[in-house]
Amino acid sequence: MGSVQTVQSQAFVISEVNGTWGDAIEAPGSAALNTGDNANVTSVSCPHTGSCAAGGSYFDSSFHSQAFVISQT
Image 1 (tube, rainbow, N blue to C red):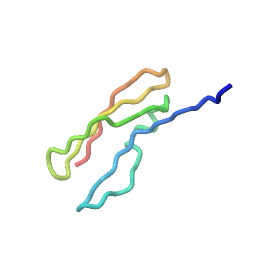
Image 2 (cartoon, helix red, strand yellow):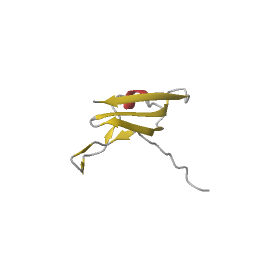
Image 3 (cartoon, rainbow, N blue to C red):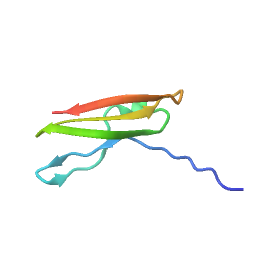
Image 4 (cartoon, rainbow, N blue to C red):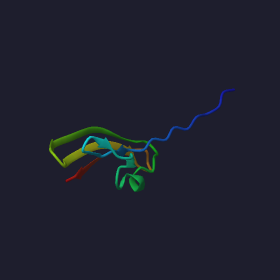
């Protein structure tokens, strides 16, 4: 018999300032929503310097996929 693996994923973001990348952090607010332990960021857009938005999805406690959008200016 093989072992069962549990995979958990969290949505994370990283900021870059003057060519230097910061530390990865969990996408703000996603920990409370991601009760199904499967979240990801699938798209990032930065149309202006210092202004970005990211979108992705997570699974709620009923294992339904939900969308989210976060932004930073």
